[in-house]
Image (tube, rainbow, N blue to C red):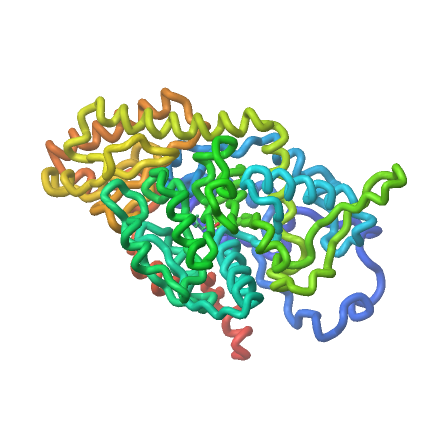
Length: 508
Ligand SMILES: *Cc1c(COP(=O)(O)O)cnc(C)c1O
């Protein structure tokens, strides 16, 4: 049985075996060359496994059991907001009008989809406190690059060519990466003793060269920077823009708004805050909301509504007539399925529900942090900052490593044996042996209790015998992986089968 499960689907293949066969009258008649241009036709059939439907089902079910996912267990991966994805959204996204709409369909034949996008723009604008929204960016990091391109367009429109973008030293890796990719010079700002932006350091680093400060609030330490109004003043006084990395929006929806804090540009991670399933490399979306002064430069087209005042139903359209726009950021209009799920989520929770979502996320994080302290693990895994946290918090595994001889990595690997996805580890970089824990609002108190007790039991076990954690995981389909080689020399291609490889290489 176990040997059988290790077989690849290519090894199961038997010539001529099929899952499904089209009946005669479903097949196109005539010559294939008349249907598809000759230069696009394969010379040889694709090298696909030939298997029956039950084998396909078993193959994918077996793969899904090797993987860890949110529908299987608790996933407190800080910064990433792995919350439950309501199944209702899948039904709505699968409605034929949503799932089968062709991206090239003309606007007057896709009024419903455009209306949904227009309404979503409005809802996101309200949540951000910034009225103008583009749904185009496909991820948070894509929103960041859009934001810096907008910043450059804004400064150029005023005859300025500013070269520097500031990020705090706690920033997520995509922030400095975006700064460099878009062609700005990166300037790092220090963190003060309370975990916020060091104001004196910020004052000493801003100037006429500063294009933008990119910030997330609450920041990646899970702490709300209450100096945000002063930060905004410092940045705006030198004529720069203030960019909000919205990955931590889950902490504040309906409670406060980035626009009110003074931010000019905000991105959303719809796959984090707004329940688009993520983590497997599938589609996400990183819409942006901006202030009036940035609006002229937004990507085109924008989804607009026109009401001619005749009492006829309003019309929705794509507005390409935006001469100062930075242009298009992607093909078509964005990851529409993500918009459907987000819109379903916002409408099913409503304004009150969204606020409750954030309040519960913050409550759950503080509860879990307090529970760990109550279990007496804080001398080994102390909170990096002794403050009320927002939706996530950072622990330091440095004392644990010193006293028990197990590292944060060992603890993370041992958690896998208990059916948990580990928290984010070794980020933020400025905390030694960091664990960044984000429970999210969709977990029960019992789950949080069990998780805290599991951590306590792993520490007790390590005091007795540290090798169990150092050699973990013990129960997963694969043990410790060589992550450096996996990242540096990834094997991303199935090795061609013998014979087939030879044929493809033109060998007999
Ligand atoms: C996830 C994340 C990003 C990047 O967002 P993607 O959608 O993954 O591109 C940026 N900043 C922070 C703090 C994040 O957690």
